Length: 300
Ligand SMILES: [Zn+2]
Image 1 (cartoon, rainbow, N blue to C red):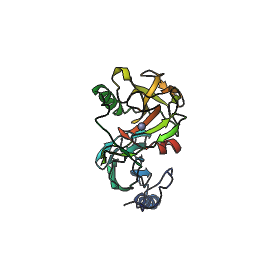
Image 2: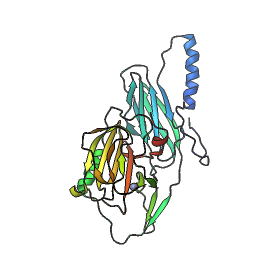
Image 3: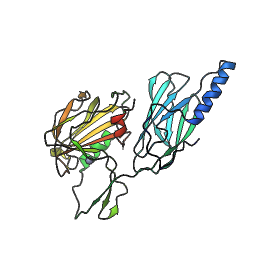
Image 4: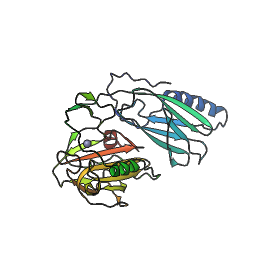
C-alpha cells in the first residue's frame, strides 16, 4: 500500500491527478466485474501529490456512489472536512508542515459505508536555517492579537472562492522563503518555522489579494497588534486563509469581498519588523503551508 519514493530523489513536479496503486488494482477488478454484472461503483479515492514533502498541501478527491452522504477524511487520526464538488464528488485539503515527522502517513476515507486506508510517504526536506543572538526578550504579542489571529485561523467557510494559481501579493523580491528554521542563542527552536513568505519592497508599495476572498480580520498596531503590526486576514473559503502582516496602510474593511489582484493595503514595517516588507502566510485548516505549489500550479 505504501507509495514509495526514495528521499534522495528530487521533488517531482506536482501532477494533476494520480491514482494510487491499490486503487488502480481495484479499478481493474471493478471494470472486469462491470462486464459480468451491473455492479455499483464503490468509494474511490485519489491523492495528489502521492509523494508529498514537508509543507505540501495534500489534495484528496473522493467519488462516492450515493449523493448527499459526505465522506469523512482523517490523516493520522486528525479529521478534515470534505467539500462537495458535485453531488457524488468531494475534495479535502490536508496540510503538512515542517514540524511534521517525515515518514508514513495514514489517510483514511469513509463513505458509502466503506473505508479506504491509504499509506503515503511524507518526504523530509531541509530548510535553510537562521541563527539569531538575542539579548533580553523581543516584542511580545498582546493577548488581543493572539486571540484575534487564533480565531481567524479557525475559520472554515464552505464556499470555494479562489480560482487557479495564486498571484504574487507583492512585486517585491522574496527576502525570506517559507519554512526557514531558527536557532536562538545557539538553541534550535523546535516549534519555529517561517510561516509564510516575505517580500521586500519600499514602504507604500502595493499589496494585492493573491486570490478572491472575503476580509475577515483587520488588526491595527494602534489597537494592540504589537508584533503582527497592521494586519489583514483574507478567507479564500474551505479552510484556506491568507494573512498579511506589517502593512503600512490598510485599504479594505472587514466583510469586503476582494478579487484576485485587488489592492488591500501597502507595504510597511509596523509591528515587530526591522524594515519594510510584507509577510504573507497561507494557511490550510489552521496550519501554515508552503505557498509555492499554490502560486505556481494552483490547487483546484
Ligand atoms: Zn515573515
